[in-house]
Length: 282
Image 1: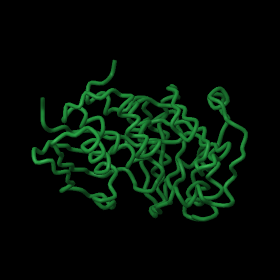
Image 2 (image 1 turned 60 degrees about the vertical axis):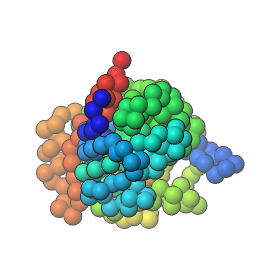
Image 3 (image 1 turned 120 degrees about the vertical axis):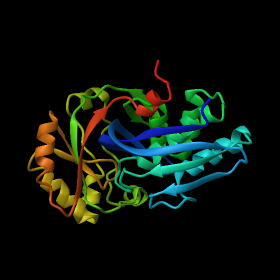
Image 4 (image 1 turned 180 degrees about the vertical axis):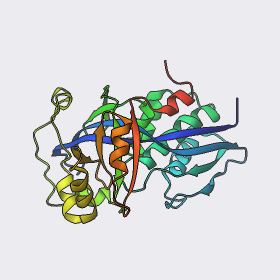
């Protein structure tokens, strides 16, 4: 077996995000639709024999100690008692703090890859359970399918949303998920949203008003993009997106985006490409 793997770890969009309650432990009850897009971080993993877990090459603004890839690798190493380690290199392309799930995706890619590199022989259920300890989004990427998520984001049902082209605008501000979920003004008692209603066009992002009020850059990006197509924030922000039927339409609007923001066009995917790269598709 190869001792090095190179992976394209994708971003995600929350096509809708609803909060219908809050548990006694403070976690929110969610309904959300996850879909992958072909904006990817590039990760290289190489087995080390001395048990070391390091990230020597990275353009990530996240410190090595806080990198979810490192946390994921250490979790597997300790839990399953392997003497092997890994050297992680990453070319970070997904904006940090943008609501696109880059950190969660990279952690999931690490779990999936190390299962092979370290020959742990864990099932997808095992890996998803480990991923859930790192964050609900991690389990979505481990499962590898576009999904409808409920509970605190851990109950996943595969879905097949339309494969649009998305124009995504990064207003170049980092939004704290913890801050938004802790906000007093966040509405937490919305009616539950169903898959059927979502597929018929219902739903919004209930975090959007809170973020708009606290981050004027995000609010301005939503208003600007709304001129061309119905726009929405992904997750707790800061990135906003709109769907288009063709690459040409998305590119045309991208050419008009103010220079103060970053923007890119991405194609939707309903399968995590890491699953394809690792031969996990059935």
